Image (tube, rainbow, N blue to C red; front, side, top):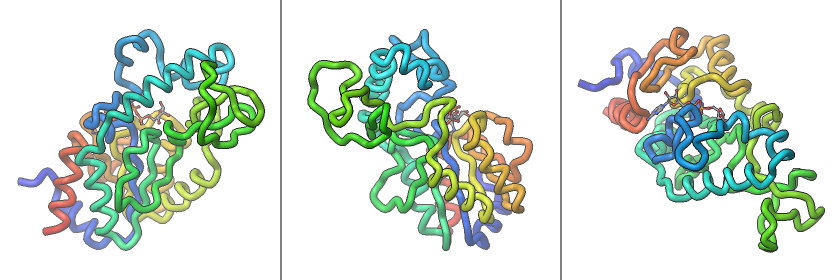
Length: 245
Ligand code: APR
């Protein structure tokens, strides 16, 4: 039998506007460790909270830059998994479909993926620490972090660090979509980090049906109309199959 409750399939059949919020859990099956997983190897003695901050970067720009280099290599080896592909298929099944992600790994950027709202930036993009302008390429002068070709300051990854504001346009469109959602999916996120974690609550406040997909319960679980317990790479393809019947 399908792990998808028939009443969820019925609800989805009549849904016009579907919004999905993804977190690190959807990339777990691509081999990208989630944030709450213990960091492996060399970086095990650090936590993201102490490295992914402007203060940490100012204090030790080399360490933070090298941590992101490590993560970039990890991510560049990762391949999208069935969860990423199922989400591309899902966008064809509804009149309006919005994919919002907290992930910076770019794995949702698949052929056929329409607009993806990257709330926390993208690890493959680099910007000037001072000006914030995106820098496509720079001379490798052996500096770590490399120097901005325009102002000579440090370069940094174009990701949102703790204590930093999210990109305004992205947050605004994510909020607007969440408020209009008929069905809101929270997939592979622990729901601990705001303001991304407020999006499902916005949807609930506007009478959306809330679906959570996660192998473990989260603070959001008690508010979910449906909690599909399991890995996204297994559940999402099943959901698409049930909808295509
Ligand atoms: N399928 C679905 N969910 C999974 C899977 C899987 N295969 N494996 C793990 N999970 C779940 C975990 O149970 C957990 O609830 O994914 C969630 C990952 O949670 P976090 O590691 O906290 O990642 P996330 O919620 O994306 O973190 C949000 O915090 O560190 C900051 O900016 C960073 O974007 C990140 C934000």
